[in-house]
Amino acid sequence: MYPAYAAQGFVPLHAATFSGNEKKYLNECIDTTFVSSVGEFVNRFERDMATYTGAARTVVCVSGTNALHMALMLAGVERGDEVITQPLTFIATANAISYCGAHPVFVDVDRDTMGLSPARMGEWLAGHAAVRDGQCYNKGTGRRIKACVPMHTFGHPVHLDELVAVCREWHIELVEDAAESVGSLYKGRHTGLFGRVGVLSFNGNKTITTGGGGMLLFNEENIELAERAKHLTTQAKVPHRWEFVHDAVGYNYRMPNINAALGCAQLECLPAYIDSKRAVAAEYAAHFSNHPANIEFFGEPADTRSNYWLNAVILPDHEAQIEFLTQTNDKGVMTRPIWELMNRLPMFAGSECGDLSTAEWFSDRIVNLPSSVRL
Image (cartoon, rainbow, N blue to C red; front, side):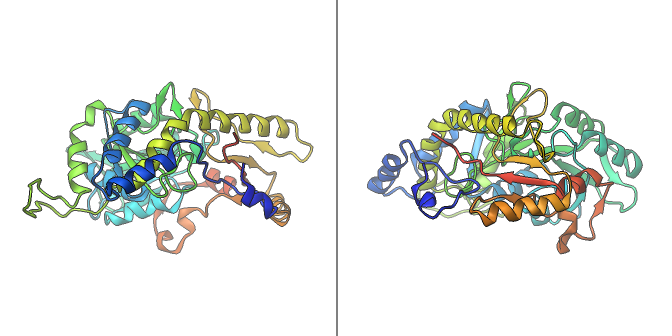
């Protein structure tokens, strides 16, 4: 499937797959000269993804990080606010919070999801927060706690029902970082539709790709935010045939037509891609069941269907993790540890944290395995 890699004796972690109408749709963009952010594929990609996910509306962006920044703004996050998230995530989650001038607060993850724990979040809030006049405040810092951003790690949904309940109790907006979980379901419903706004990513290493790109998902309850999102991501330009009038600070976040063309073709193949990835995951699970080296395959949580974006195994300890990474990469098989925990990075080292023992446990043991689509 990947002859260029095979010729090098190398197995990538996650290679893009182009097996559909990608070239056809890209040629249409070139032939029509509509390659920038105005074009039919931009609109079509939004419509098709809304149909696939069950969203009431969607708005495409240049990247998942841009989309998350916009989602936080739409949720009302302002400079000086605090946003609860997990330390075990890709840097974009914490960066987007910083773009708003807000402060991340890191709360631990659950053992069965690797995502933000509703129980740990509830415990942290009970000890550190108070609700006044319908707003949640940190009793120690005095700052408003405006939002919560769970991330569905490697495509595995977090415990969304419980998280929604905690956010409702404490008057906190839920913004889902579903960047890794396109095609993943929680109790039969697509991720990204449980809070104020949800965010997908179509980076080059994701299950489907537009080269670079992201998308905002809106459910029926929050559909009024979609038009605001489209306006702000298009430099807040007031529509007119020739005048250039802008009524707010806007952003150049609108996805180009040429990227959306890739997205339309990729989305047509997504059901087959997820079937393939789930089949690969099943093979890994079978291989590592009762493994003599005590290596545990990380399977999807209860009540979910995961896209298994990246397959993961849990090694017995940190020494075994390093040995596994060394041997596989020495032999041309690309494996990777989980990201460095956000609270260990210099720019977030001073952030407030709860007890992060589960995230730290994962950090010392998780290894990602090659997870490309196989057709």
